[in-house]
Amino acid sequence: MRILWRLHGCCARLLTTTCFGTAALNTSFSTAWKPLAQHFDRLSGLFIDVQRNSSFRMHETVENKIDPELYSPHPDVRGMTILDRAAFKKTITVPVLKVKKEIINRLLKSLKHMVLHRAGLKRVIDDPEDEHHKLVLLDPHKMSSEGSLGEADRKILEQFDIIPELAKRDVEFTYDFFKAEEIFQAVLPEGQDVTSGFSRVGHIAHLNLRDHQLPYKHLIGQVIIDKNPGITCVVNKINTIDNTYRNFQMEILAGETNMMTKVKENSIQYEFDFSKVYWNPRLSTEHSRIVDLLKPGDVLFDVFAGVGPFAILAARKKCRVFANDLNPDSYKWLQHNCKLNKVDRTVQVFNMDGRDFLRGPVKEQLTEELSLSVKEKESSLHIVMNLPALAVEFLDVFKHLLDGEPCSSNLLPTVHCYSFSKHDNPAKDIQDRAEAFLGTSLEGRCSVRLVRNVAPNKEMLCISFQVPADVLYKRQCPPEVSPEEPASKRLRPNEDSSEEKSIS
Ligand SMILES: C[S@@+](CC[C@H](N)C(=O)[O-])C[C@H]1O[C@@H](n2cnc3c(N)ncnc32)[C@H](O)[C@@H]1O
Image 1 (cartoon, rainbow, N blue to C red):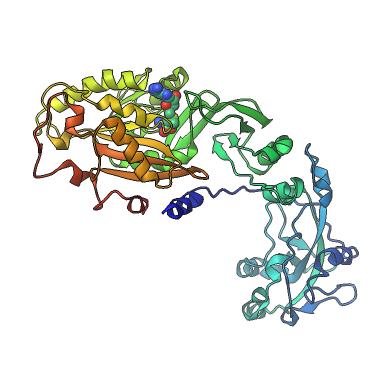
Image 2: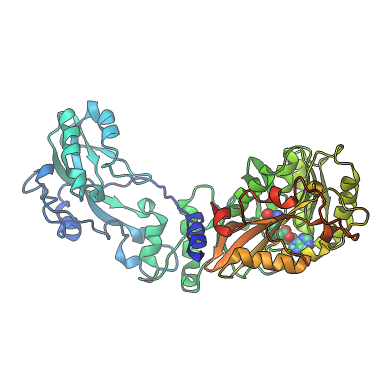
């Protein structure tokens, strides 16, 4: 069971970076053989010195191996802590194919899989000895397996009337052509994790560096700026996110100090000061998943609203929204974002503790909504509680929150409460804790979903359930509030609430 959760989490955490730059080529034939010795001596049979033997036939290749060091920057950069871009320069010898100028474009389309692709590097260069031809740079890695030199590639060349002969050229690889991962791998200590993954929040890249990476933090920050257009500031998290307002303590590693940022999530614009509020770009799917459950006219109470990613999305769907956050900065940006997205009339915002919000505005509104007869009332009520470290502990507020007669069970509000779990069975763990705070069993009347894997052995989950009438009302409920359609049925799309089913 644990493995299922872990797999899901790993998939969610894949992250890539890109590189860009300008080309710098050394196309001299005279130096071609020297680096060959460095890189291709081990690749028996693939390259033959152009000075001694100007070409070879691709199908003559008998054995090829991939050189894992081929795209490594100059080895002297190992241990560098202050970025010296010039030190990364390295000459790489690549195979080239001589092609008539007129057919270059058509051929490139067919040879896409073999061409050397590096952001900023020219794939086609002039042939200094022949003005009617050009040279296409090929990727040595793509050339070095039997498959890429096989029948299919030769047939392509035959179709273009090209003799399958390769020469070689020296290409000067500068800092610009190396990818961020290649740079980190070359600089940081060998054999240690060099993951350069980061969260992007507008122009800010947000890292969570490990101890062994800290001596290189400024270099890492600068490389991320260099290799990711649009990122102008890199910060590192310096505490675990355990403060009340869930914002990070952060250190600026490189770039500008401006923490005021703009992001777009689910087609909605948000603006805020990232150093003062909570924002996690990995929650966008969760925000839309919850709002997808709502229909126009429904009511959403967002107890821990942050700068508004559930609230504003729901308001844009024409739901009525009551959004609250204790952090005065979140409250300020929540108001601002409501205006920015023209939903300030639909969202009522509050700046209070979640308990007070539930006992005050939420209670008042629920009382009003639930006093309407079933006929009058078509909208449903949702309460979202995204404060995963603590929200479950707020569930006791629902105990006997409402006075008056228990309402029909299909009107009862649905709670979506988030929690972290390090338990072996996280779904059971969150259900057990929710039950303890509500003082009732949720067996058969809740669903639990994995939201994301937060850290090794730490999951974020969401438990959803309709607050049982006997919990919500002071007055005792009759044994069955609505026999035709019990709450449990509507809450359970599957027959049980087991985590495997929720994940699918
Ligand atoms: C994990 S963030 C979630 C923000 C937003 N809902 C989202 O999905 O991005 C939790 C929010 O709860 C707020 N918060 C923390 N303790 C609170 C409390 N006792 N009452 C109300 N809000 C609180 C924090 O300021 C923070 O904005």
